Length: 220
Image (cartoon, rainbow, N blue to C red; front, side, top):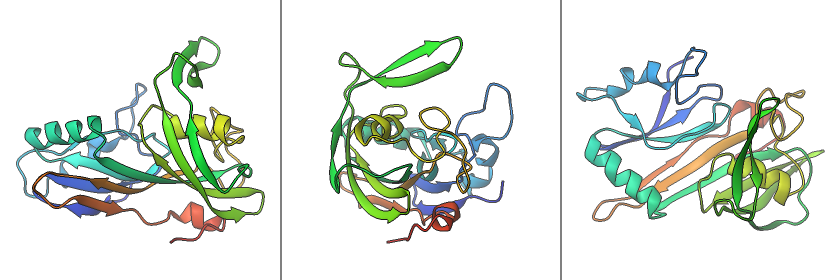
């Protein structure tokens, strides 16, 4: 894995552009993960930075790191208080029913020995809300921008399938898996904003990935 691009930096935060395919946490079977890069990301600070939230292994884009324990506590509270704004770009394996909308589907985790675990819509699950808009039609596919209000596991992947009627392109769990031009789940954490009382907000934007552009997606 090549060096990681830094999108934002100050005394208490880093926002990196996490490459697709790099897990945030060490896989149980072993292998590369974000931890392997944290010494380089100290950049003169005594402590290694710590990931404040998680992105799926396949998901590229904005990931917030805290540079000290006090900052980590503040950022965790910001997530709890919904002071963090995020947008994601996704390529849908189909077309949405409208040009924009809001998906409200509570989610719950299920597991089986045959299929492993996954998230499903469930009335007694945890509330999950995603706003979305159609950005661009890409032949049989669509470029969608999501603005999630909540941050449930696999939220956008399940909301795409059950709220928009099609899975994300390349999704191995909720869709057809790897297809031509999509060697991963096509989801990209486009932007991240964190409101900080008494300080300027953290604002970062990750450029459009090459595999999105190869399918005809345009930045902007």
